[in-house]
Image (cartoon, rainbow, N blue to C red; front, side, top):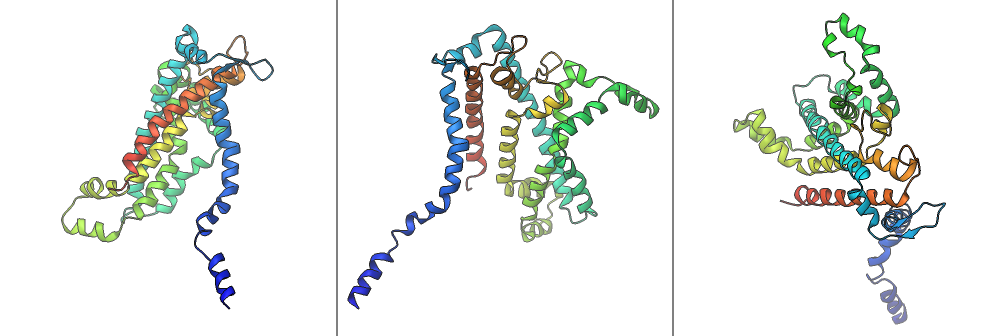
Length: 311
């Protein structure tokens, strides 16, 4: 009997349970290391070398980064792509996310009728393939295709080659992208607003708060974590954007590199090769990816700390 009690104490202690959880996370951890952590570390390593997979790679230290910022042609292209990406991000924050929270407030209003229908209309564009969306909007924005229709309805002033002018091409592409993905932040805002206790809103109504005051003083502070998360997702996605520009313009960011983003610049440098030579430089492309990663860290960490912490 005493031996049974001794064995029970030996094998039923709480110590093993402290590492049992690792067995459940081990498969996901292995997948993350293989497909996420290792490529990231390898990319950092590649940024210190020159040459491609079919060539002998040579260690060059920080030369790729110096080339990225000092070479007359490459630095100009990179600076333009970085600036365009920032503009692309700002347009998404203003149009996509601000309209998303506006639609969410309207959809969660007690006076709203047919909210399921409107939610569906807002979310449907996110189910379209980006290539399909880009191609359709490319036709719509082409005055050759839409000019006659706009003239018939008295809006001939709108018939202009938006994608063919450097001053409007980036804005047009960003607005199309914002239109397509607006449904995701809208639904996230809707879910966050519906989690607010009705008692809090009822007290505000009894105290005489206007809808505007209720939104700014109660609703917005309570959904701050969701606002921060959506801002982070927008920031990360925009700095990795590629497909919408590829669909509506091309990998050169025409016209005149006015729609060139970091994603298209990286593709030309590290994968396809710059025109007209067409020889990719994996080391220089890895340097672009490394700087982008650092920019994302600088933008994401403060936002997380400001919006996800406990008040």
